[in-house]
Amino acid sequence: LQKLSLGNQQRVQLAAALLHAPDVLVLDEPFSGLDPVAVDVMSGVLRERSRAGVPVLFSSHQLDLVERLCDSVGIVKDGAMVAVGSIERLRAYERPRWLVDGPPGGGAWVDGVPGVHVVQADGTRTVVELDSTAVGAEQPLLQAALAAGAVREFGPVRPSLVELYRDVVSVPTEVAA
Image (cartoon, rainbow, N blue to C red):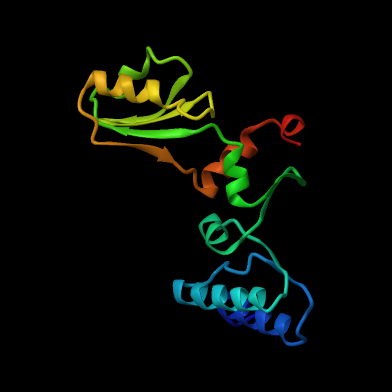
């Protein structure tokens, strides 16, 4: 077994875990060392088990896979669960972010808009964060962008699980818990 590649070791371990048709499947980093084809196969097996009613719990640092496969996630920091729920639920706790593609100036045109903070600015593309989640809170942002020049794109930005993870673990543990 030790002479097998890491990917083949993972396959053997999954086969051994499934051999006895467990009521719950708990896996530690099941995608570690797998090539993209093997990741697809492993993902299919986990989805199949889940559809069959078997709860699947796994740890992973490959958050793009977690985002694709999981209907509920937990984020652990310093040994404690600091966030848990669906990815959509975790997104609901984030301040709204908006993308504006249009006015040049690296987002300098945002300076006069209250409750709006530039997160990222690159040429004509600016991502901002709003202090308010109220319906229509983005309208002053749009008005300022239009006043500064032509707007080619304007819309909400959905944070990825990677961004959610970064935001959650950057909060001091005593506040996040």
